[in-house]
Length: 396
Ligand code: ADP
Image 1 (cartoon, rainbow, N blue to C red):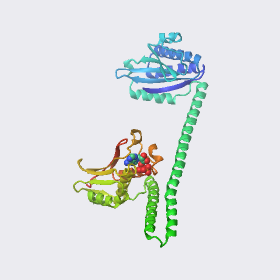
Image 2: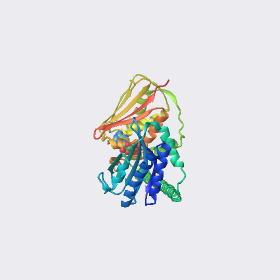
Image 3: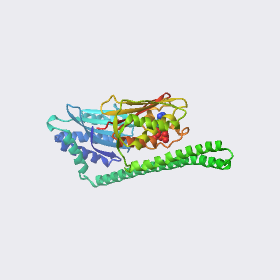
Image 4: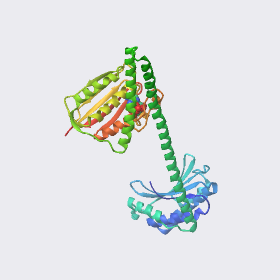
């Protein structure tokens, strides 16, 4: 259905306007004068009926095609709910128009008047679009219509402004929420670092074994802060297109196994298995793809219980590309959340209270994979685990 024009029906002064609008549409389409008049009169008549009930009505004109022919439709949407298919008040209008239907749409009643267009008028989509343009540009037919149009424009503008304000408030709130989470996430490891540093200082040369254990804790927490700061910096770089990629030709399986052997010590509670493929060569930025692998394996460990396995598979069954999957046996992700996990700052409600994070990892990972002309996606079954996939093109 193509909307041609619409008018709010606020008071009786709108009645002549509805009549004139219906006539000028009929005229533009080439209807005979008698059809124009009967159509316009039936429209004005229904408008009169609804205006007697309420001032909350809208009249819209549409053109619709059912592949055989075109129909001109006047649809009156009213807040009044007393009018029905059998209402006596519609009797007069019914006599004038071949099809008049009454239906309900939520809290509204919709009265639809349908007029089949004779084939010789050769209505087409182009003609319909020209009519829409014509109605937009048509000069007001009376000072009243002029004022009404200006009022409508002002109210549209006010609505637009309101929407802008609403969006910027949402954005602002999101930003404040993010800043408060980010500062909390940064402060927690720093507090731990400070505490261990103080105890370590008091130990000095007394207990070298505990001292070394505390220094390890300090180093682990410092790495956490480092990752968070790195993510914050990457986020702004990715958003401003300022990431420098240093592409080089790499045998992927060797690279992947090197990366895993350097990171597996960080996940002592999980067993990590790699199923590689025959040698394949890819052009990639080693540091950035390492970051992708760390993010996916890190999440697999973070969102699954100790003792669970993480399986990484390299698949080259599809020509010219490699697909890597990282599967875990963790908590899984609901269908609703699965659609959002790659969005900036998204964190599932199930994890916010339990697991630390900022919701930036997958967003950054997606940016890196896209820059490598690849794709990233995920599958998951709640309570059973998730599998994240990314594919990259082979070096040409
Ligand atoms: P973070 O882990 O810091 O919250 P990410 O962007 O890496 O940020 O992940 C976004 C969200 O996606 C997580 O908060 C979590 O809800 C969900 N998620 C990511 N990986 C997994 C996974 N392996 N298992 C379950 N949920 C996951």
